[in-house]
Image 1 (cartoon, rainbow, N blue to C red):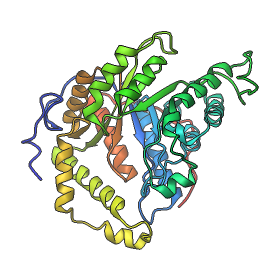
Image 2 (image 1 turned 30 degrees about the horizontal axis):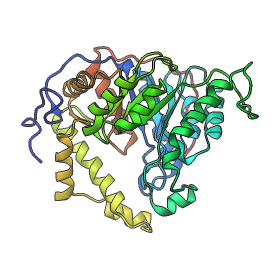
Image 3 (image 1 turned 180 degrees about the vertical axis):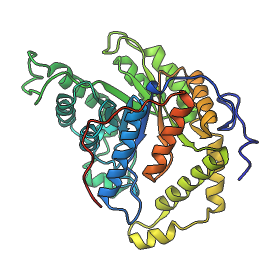
Amino acid sequence: MQNPHVKTCQGCDGGRVYSQAAPGLPVSAHSVLDVVPQLPGQSAAAALRETVEVAQAADDLGYRRFWLAEQHGVRGVGSATPAVLASVLAARTDRIRLGSGAVMLTNHQPLVIAEQFAALAAAYPSRVDLGVSRAPSVQPSTATALGWTDTAWDSFPQRLDELCCFLRDGLPGRAPVGDVRLALAGLPPPVFVMTDTPAGAQLAAVRGLPVFLSHHVASAATLASIAAYRDSFESTGPTGKPYVGVTVGVAAADTEEEAVARLAEYLRVKLRLKAAANRSTPAELMDLLAPPITGRERIKAERLLDDPGYVVGSRSGVAAGLASVAASTGADEIMVVPLAFDGLVRSAILRTIAAGLTRAIRTMPRHAPHFVATA
């Protein structure tokens, strides 16, 4: 792989390895997106315990949110149930907001999601977010198991309206929605739309909802999506003014060389899990994941170094990179995606980011009980 010192970015249009520190958003304007990574041979309890520890690290460091993405049928990803996982994490953290990034609303009936997150918001007041999105394409067998139909994709706007209606009109003292009354109605959680297209951003805007753009998935569409959102925003919505967050994939370490190595390691595992046969056994997968990195994997890593949706570097370099993303997009919030399967490495990435953004990392005493599950 090319020496990272050669690929130095002075803005948001060059390489993704940064070597200049720069001011940017404070830690409290940064959030975390996680997928509960689970490696072959690792128990579900162990994978969940690691994610709890990563969420606790984010909480201690002063991050604003910790969201869990809904994904189904993806090997190595355990975050299929954001509402359940958010409740586990909320019980074991003190301050950080927990939520979904995002619930694939076309997989669910809006009333069910409204009731799940209303219950969460009642249990953890002012600490619950509800991010929603369209469901992406999945394997046919997974789509069938989810009850997904050809018309589900087009139903997202209607389902979003139904969801917001249940949450808004389900407040105490309000009439039920039609003949349906929301269970455990209380102060509703805020609703966010997560998307990677201008059309999705505009859909959020006309409803006056905050938006998170998947910059690490489709960085080429981010600026157009932001323009569509700001141009179409209706101030009569729940936020009253536009609110834009962007996701950024981050690999960080003490040195740029170590950060690039972490990115390569992450991609090596991710790409091989994706390419493995569906019926591969854990033992076969573990053999498949053995190093070294291949030429194809190396090329993929080098391409991500030039992708504006990714920031790779040391403490000061990552701070500069995130500041550049904030400046080029005008984002109100950056949601970092720590690029590692290992929980200790994900926590270390979050600490490196925080250390680059502030001189004093805030660590508060923990009051929530420790997670007690064992492998």
